[in-house]
Amino acid sequence: MSTEISGAERWLAAIVESSDDAIIGESLEGVVTSWNRGAEHIFGYSAQEAIGRPIQSLIWPAEEDQKDTALLRRVVRGERIEHFDAVRRHKNGTTVLVSLSMSPIRDSGGRLIGVAKIARDITSRVALEQSLIASSDQVRALTDQEARARAASLANQRFRELIENAPDGILQVDSTGRIILSNRTAETLFGYTSDELLRGRVDDLVPEAHRRGHAEHRANFAKAGVARPMGLGLDLYARRKDGSEFPVEISLSPVKTEAGGVHVTAVIRDVTERKRTEEQVRTLQESYMAELKARQKEAERLNHLKDEFLASVSHELRTPLHTILGFTDLLGEELEGPLNDTQREFVRHIHRDSEHLLGLINDVLDLSRIETGQLRLHAESLSLREAIFEAVSGIKSHAEARSVDIDSDDPGDLHVIADPVRLRQILYNLLSNAVKFTAAGGKVTVKVRRQGAAVRITVADTGIGMSREDQAQIFERFYQVTHKTGGAGLGLAICKQLVEMQGGSISVESELGIGSQFHFELPLT
Picture 1: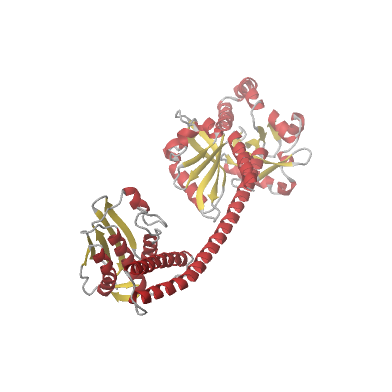
Picture 2 (picture 1 turned 90 degrees about the vertical axis):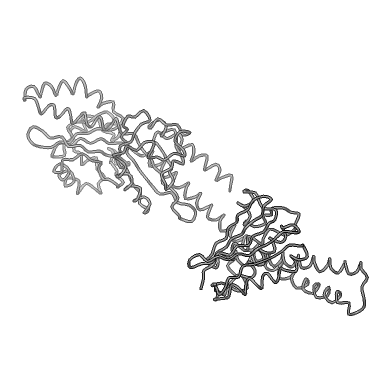
């Protein structure tokens, strides 16, 4: 399946790269993420120059900013923008007129992550339309006799060849719907000869399903007298002589006659290939996203199985470890007879390593419960003084054995909203780490400071400290500053999760050779 997807991606990339249209991907912040050869040709920037830069700084004229921002808001709401005429700027500073289509890009979860744009250069087409309009204006400004002579001269000498060789079909229609001008491209598009077009009506080129209202649409356009794209936002189709239909883009321009009537010039472009490409892109995207979604579900299922397995194994391992710890306690009491020095050392080793392994299993079990949402907190108002006292008392003997001094501030009558068991676990983990990484003669301190409606608790030590790289990763699962002190690297990851689950945050400040300070905040009662 991955090979099929890779092949489809290469096919899609080839389609995009070979398109004459500019196909551009943007982030929601307007930063260019993809830029094909069509974009390089139309706007003058290479992909290397464009990708990673804001689209606004590249090709947006300042006067178009408000209009383009409004379009982007529509796309963010999930709309698709079809064939919107816009002004853009070439790298050399010249103006480029484009027909713009915009659509949202979503990830496998349906979340909007960007915008896809397809821009077609219509500068030449618009220039042609304006030339036709300008020509008509010039004709109207002359006397009747001069106008006829000038019109014939312009048509024969300057415009006829331009019109005939234009890449788009061009028709001019009078107020009754009769075709009075056509070019060779129009003949090719519709399958009629020039004589057949000039004897016919424009309604013959409209699909039968839309003919009934076409005359009314023509009259309304002539009355408005404003050049515009036809059917903005709609899928338009035209009908060939053989009855087949094909998708088109149509731009309309009114031309007033001397008699006070209105002729309409239509520039018609066959967009069959573009529609086919868009559909292929859409199909491949849907297929790709469906595959991603399936893989995500499978990954979630496997992760869930892993969590269940860890929880089960951890539970099964804890039972015999409690038994081992109980028997080593009994052996250490020497109730069944005295032990020699070697036997006592063996018992201490067994007891210490069993406690270490039990701690690791408890960490794995806690982390599994947190990640699967099975850990339930029971928050209540509790005395911060009592919580700190219990944690310090629990670690004090270990600190004394390592010749590490441990001290704490008196928080007074401060009460926090927290789960008492999990707060003690957080404090004990931080204190245990501080003692572990502090050499003999060093000091560990618990500091308390009120900050508005919260309290900041700091566990500081004079230990080995950490580099900036270590600080950036210290709260990740299984990360260890050094492997010489043992452990699985889960304690701080669990602390972070527990603090955040109780509405707080945790951070670290450290300097190599100086020591570390771990800060966490909790809400006050």
